[in-house]
Length: 436
Ligand SMILES: Cc1ncc(COP(=O)(O)O)c(C=O)c1O
Image 1: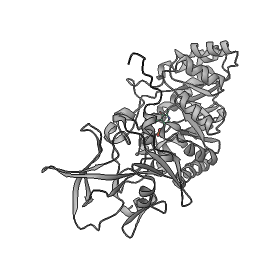
Image 2 (image 1 turned 180 degrees about the vertical axis):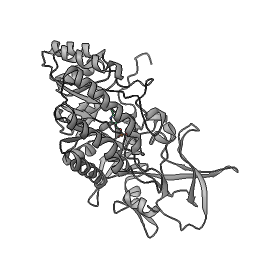
Image 3 (image 1 turned 90 degrees about the horizontal axis):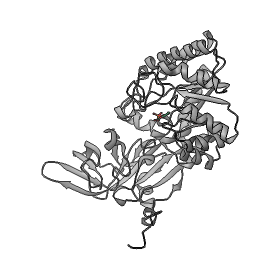
Image 4 (image 1 turned 30 degrees about the vertical axis):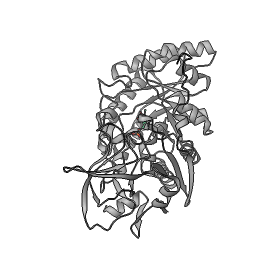
């Protein structure tokens, strides 16, 4: 894949030295709506969903894709995916509430929290949302809440920690003996046998090994271990599974020329072993589930940010922009790479090396380190790519900066789907005691 193919894959192209995204002029968007601004392409989300759905359908029709809401919980994004037929994976009551506001019904949601409180359980049981437990100890509390509310116990699932994890950063690897998530092999039988004793009659099982996995081979070992655990549980307790969930984690190519995840390998190491399990063991007719977040939304969005200061301190060149780690946290939090390009290309006469930095009062506020860019000027606009997952959802008001607006490009029209916050909103909820 060459550079322009890589850009095309993300709906980006230069026309007369101006960057277009999803067919729209990025300079015009930045002028009309201001910067920084998240710009989302509806079409990419639909396309990625369909690619994945077709892949699963071609192998095993009884499947469900639960979009991981944490990646991007904007109501319009949820509605787009809902209209495609997606189901949803939530990690908090707030995410479930947001799904309800997007007219998503409880049967479409799996609640994979961790360190669940009684309040979490009560909310889920009252709203008939499927709970995926993260610890054997939680079962007793969940049963009591069913009993207190007089609700029937129907289906229960546990998150398995298969000990082999993967991900783009140590913070996003979610399997391993020292990792807080899920239950280890040694406790799996105890978990399901207790669930049976407590009167649960239907069962699901789940794993999620990490986030940002671009080498599909990384799923092989965890899946092998997971399947061996499923076999053991099914055999020793004679239970069948209504669903088997393989989690999310599907990575995207953030760096130029990187190839996307190889779905042939993904099929071989995830879907085929699952089919073999279903065909060879007495485990019922489970739904095959996955929970991608990043794969569905990351490449759908760019962040437009304007340069306010070009600084040469004698050692280094800085391009200071109006987005910081309050707007996009990933580079600071994970040292993540997001490709940065100019919206008004200058013609490649003199390429210079810049640190693209934000306005936050911390030296770690760097959106791109040592980036080769055409000579930049104050007032130029830059596009930071692949920010549709864990972009806006991780943004904050640090340094009392309002969060930016979001616009959606849909069939060449631009819709504001979130207004930029105001100063007034920064103070929302604060109360000053009378003596002050
Ligand atoms: C339980 C669970 N499922 C799915 C996901 C989505 O991961 P990704 O966006 O990498 O697909 C996450 C992300 O942290 C998760 O914790």
